[in-house]
Length: 306
Ligand SMILES: O=C(O)C(=O)C[C@H](O)[C@H](O)COP(=O)(O)O
Image 1 (cartoon, rainbow, N blue to C red):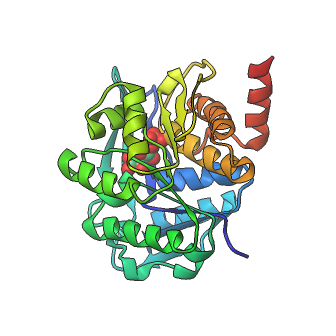
Image 2: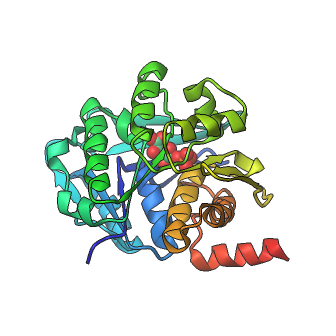
């Protein structure tokens, strides 16, 4: 059975600092988070990555299996480790510290890609992080995009700028080149300000539409999302909630957006749904644990319409 949504990138073990200073172990990695968020909405989802043959890689494989994310395109390799990261919380929000250099995922090459699965999927989701982890991973994303586009599939891109992984000038060049080949751009406001050099959300949306994408959903944090197509744009506000940890909120938005978009093909409806999913996700610690399932998102939507 072909898989509808494929995500490609690097998964990691997560250690998230709690108010008492202890670290809670979980899982992260933006595209893995997106895959799990989409699966929790009931979509058919698979993940493309490499993990190490270590306890972290096995823990991620168990996680995807529990979450119903297909692992037939995950390669487990003996020659490299699985990445890990720490999340700490301060005045400015959360901060990520990585131990991922030389990881199994960063060794992915275009010739490793599962071409058949890519040619049969409806949506491929990739990100700036998928490309930042190594030059060969960046090339792998370009090759996967080409494979999906050549069969009429949709490619979605979250800019997810991580300046600990690559310098801004290279990020700009690679991300803009990649987004220009995609159909859906899912940038966050802070990333987009740095990447585009513009600070007005309308001008940022113009920039991404100018690269040729058909849908832009610019996430504005607690201010909601600005959704644009070449024909129409709408600001959709977000439910107001008490956030404890925004880790994974953007990825939850992406996964919920893609799962809903696959059903309705309506980016405004998908963004409204995904806004509610992300608002629910920030109310707990960690990237994955607090992600809502479909029933919780529908209940949240019904609540906000009351
Ligand atoms: O930084 C990375 O490389 C990671 O993948 C770690 C995190 O799991 C995601 O970054 C969370 O992403 P947001 O949804 O934007 O909070």
